[in-house]
Length: 442
Image (cartoon, rainbow, N blue to C red):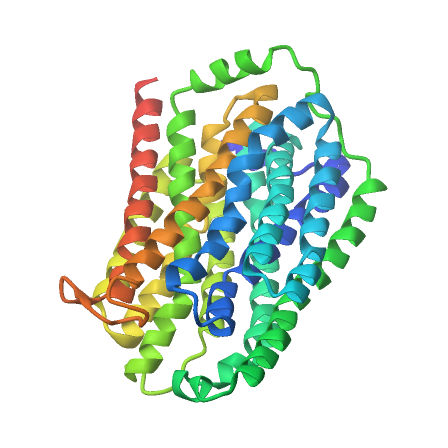
């Protein structure tokens, strides 16, 4: 404990590359959270979509992680961390610029393909950046260092939310019509609105494409340390070694469930607020983006709090404690009406805040150079964001196209759908207890 206090989280000689790599955490935070509101945006612009189809935005966005993570690990084993970052940024920019032809063609499938390519780039960035951050300093402060770097992810996320609100949701013409008034429009008017709105949806992605290219230039001129670049085992041997560690594979599973919980809570908050507005439960019109920004703000605060608490509590114990508190908040979001339920939903973010980097640090502890391959499986686990949100969309669709067409166990379907993130954070809590037991017995 005393050594952790004396050892700096980041040494002075590694501060510049640490800062440069940390900017990437904000970069994929932006991509994640400018995309979450697009489920609502596409549903408004293309009302023919069911909620399940609208949630395919998340499937396309997060499916790239499942496909690209292992190839990313092989690439950085063959080349280097820096090469992985460069290729990731190139794919990110290419996918973002593909929104222009997608908008011109007015093809929902093309938009989904563009999102998929973006996340192929993000998979490279995350597979590279997370173990690199762990390597930039002393082993005993690795989990703290990753929590610190991950603390800048919500900054990008907040930027993405603001742009999604003011550039997209606040500007699309489709949002100004209710179902009856939109249905009354002739086909030419609907086509014109759709064309304009799809162009508006593409603006944030075209803008971030330019930003990504600027950051690419910054990475090119920065000296990134070649940490632990010697590959002593074959890829097959590396896989065998990492899966021999008791905390690793359960960590991959826990990470998959965590990401699913995070994406569901931050995406379906828009439907949750819409339901409150439709039922008048709040007594006034609420703006979902503002509540999502509050959730992200306390998520950021939770990250810094978690980084501090990790110097006093063991990571698995803190993980299981935060998971228990998240379960309580999920239960409140399901059972409590109106504003109390919404506040409970927002508070889940405090307790989700440390989960991703903490699971990551626990699962990759003492991996050494094999962290590159181990990291790939943990990044692949982000595919949980593709698997679980569409299931939540199916729950919302149970009674029909509206958010509360039916009751499930006496609860409106949109509220009951939060049983999915509850299950997911429960799995994370079990992982924390499991690792605590391993450490106690070792």
